[in-house]
Image 1 (tube, one colour):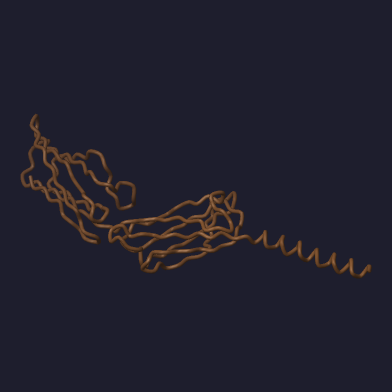
Image 2 (cartoon, one colour):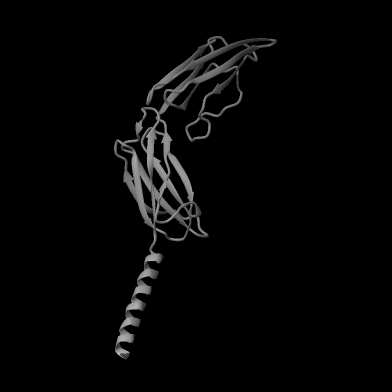
Amino acid sequence: MRWVNWLFLSFFCVFLSTISCKRGVASFTLSGIITDDSFQQGLVGAEVKLYKVPIGTSTKILIDSLILGIDGKYEFNFTRDKSEKFILTASKNNYFEITDDIPFSSLTPSTNNTRNYNTKAMSWVEMRFVNSSILPNETFRFMKTSENSNCEECCPGGLIDLVEQSYYSRTCVNNANSLFSLDYWIINGNSSQYGHKEVTPAPFDTSLILVNY
């Protein structure tokens, strides 16, 4: 009888150990769709990466990566390591990169955590101003009005003055198929001439805004 109790106890300990291990290796599932808003389809060919940031650090450790198919669907299954946060990035040449910080506390184990994203193709606009006859203190004042202002290639907003300048050229990144507009003033002494230009550049293309004055 004693050996039966011992056998039962052994099995019970193994059972508890198994449960404990399963709890310790619980996993997260993160999935969703990443959409190309410029062509209304999945962001096919984009590289999606998932990082973890251990508690008390700013170090990004790569968990996994994948390449999107035409449906734009992604899925990551990863262990429930205690972390400060996770970071998902999606990048594709000539598209605006996606970066999302995902707090550890926002994820639920043993269920599907869904996060969908979207981005747009890049286009470019060259602003070119040519002054064929410079007058003393003549000022060309301009201000761009477009969606993009917070990226590495984006041109800043606000008023910019060009004083006695014969030629100016700058290329700005823009959302494809989105309006890029420009207000300008040609100021000579007490007189001012106002103008407005706009273009809607196609994906991956460069459009020109030209002002001759």
